[in-house]
Image 1: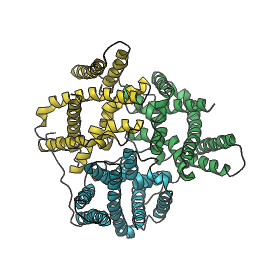
Image 2: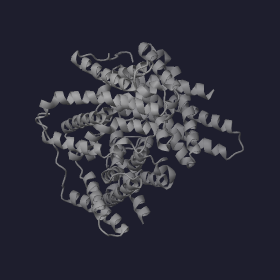
Image 3: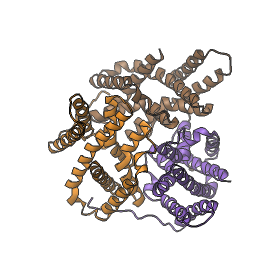
Image 4: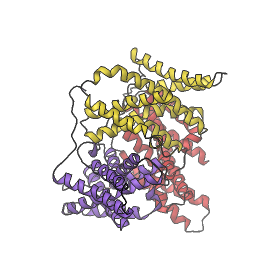
Length: 202
Length: 202
Length: 202
């Protein structure tokens, strides 16, 4: 079940990487690398920071196959992929819900402070996109206008809040993930974004 | 004592990150991330390279609180922060003095060659700014015009030179740090910079 | 023998870093850093991902000396280095042949899947250049027009194909490396590149 969601998230992340790399006029190799870092970059950074090496995707070849397959699919159908935008957005959103909670639990396993765990969850969900944007020579989009990380942080806070109550573990996991997903869906639907902070004096 | 300096350095680094992120018109999340990487990026890279994981700031939640607090402070007072520029510059300079020596000693603990230790010290002090500039889509400023890393390297050379003499350990630590600080202050005061190397033929 | 090739590759990579950093009008420190990351960046990323820390160049000071020496040489002779372009290209190409196979074997030692090993070999050979380009604020050149990584991948496939046959280990190592080298030489000679994938609709 969770593994299925993980794979769906990986597919959505990989395809988003392919589309951006095509826009940047990269060659086939560049496209595959961008697909890869978008899909596994967040988890890789998390694993490096907590010392969980070799990092996750290296130990389970399934991710590599899924990313390669999704990338070929996205390249071949690139002119028709607009029809899939809604599905991809849903996969992506469900993916970040799952990744957030998975990241939090990796932090708990390493006996880290709840705030650090939430940071790890947010990183897992969002830093693949950050690395993708850096490789494409852009200021990362989540630093500018997406209420993406905020959804992850809210989910993380929910996770630790629920643990204070006598709720069965599985529910904590699922509810926190759903908070991430719903926050993001609502934010996109109602075009909610974090305020930008301007200053003429700085 | 050293912990106090460390915290002052963290504050100065975080605030410098906030100011640059505001100039780049980032949103609140982007600003906090830039504050974070500026403050802990150098130490994180050092810890990753020597295999000291989970990395430092994950094991002591104080850094997180200090960075969040400084960032909120800097955001709220962003139009008045010019009055603090001198204090911030001093904190920052004292911070890099300390970070350089701390980085060197982490290298010694890992039984690395003195030159590698000096590289680790310089990295600890300066790579937070490098990662900040990469995330902001700039060529890192220290590669172009600051005599920043040079101060760290001089301090590192001093550290290993002093160890050849029968000087008490604490003095070695402090003198090396002061060499970093004084070099940087003099360089800024007298506008000394490393030569740029031009070539029309390359 | 392999160590000699490794050093020649390191020299070629460091010099290529120096030339690019000079073009970007960096100062002396920036140039040295770019030389360093170009030369050791790929191996460093590989070592981090598989948890082989402290990373390689920190444990053998020779690399540091070679990189510093090559950089000083390249800076002093920057206006005449065009005469060396062919030699440098050959060193570089032989270097990536070696780095690819070395990376593959580090992956095998960590008991990783052959595909992951090939990815590690390709990374070892090519990501120094990627990090160099990111630090110079460019979209990495190998994502756009070089048949560089492809040569590494072909060499990697050869490596694992040959292991199916009763061939002595040393030959597997050498033949795979030569496949990388010859592929790259042919690609450059005949101006072969991976197709870019365009789309007006994305």
